[in-house]
Length: 75
Image 1 (cartoon, rainbow, N blue to C red):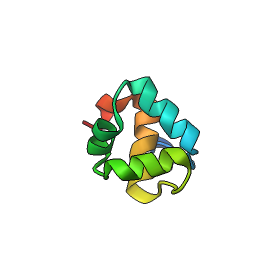
Image 2 (image 1 turned 180 degrees about the vertical axis):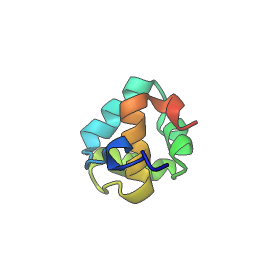
Image 3 (image 1 turned 90 degrees about the vertical axis):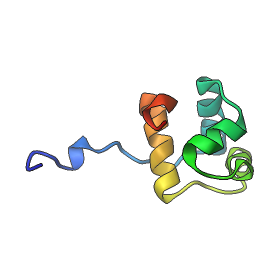
């Protein structure tokens, strides 16, 4: 653990609705399946994709992991 530092962490940057939609489509899943993998409501995924709401906290971290490593990284 002494070798573990910030450089080992997946960077977390804000994501636009278009980026989230593209990410979900890249993974080939519906909003419902994507929501279930992220442990959020399908309506929230829809709101993110339309730009009505922005992901933050744990959801944004999970989206960053999916972006970097694919959906399989979180399920």
